[in-house]
Image (cartoon, rainbow, N blue to C red; front, side):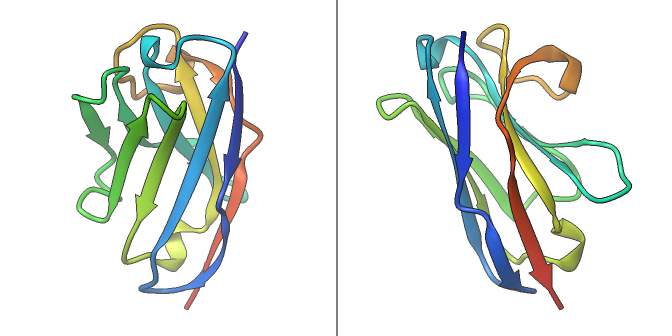
Length: 124
């Protein structure tokens, strides 16, 4: 079983930067891909970014490409999401997720482990 704990959320202004982190335990971290999803009030959970177990493959949604960067430190069992040029539309609860295998995945159904989420609020 894998436990995921997000941290680093908060309230920022439009144009600011923020980094959220997700610490993992319970399974060899490099053996599974990781992803970030977000859910805004009244909306479905949407894909943000994903990274393979080795870190050599990443995917981004069109809405964050060029502004957000996903990375991982397998020695620290941690995945990061660096968010730059934040917009009010980025306001959501951000969830990290662990896949069943080492590949980077974009669909929520391909993830088996989920964190509890961290709130990111961007004011205009």
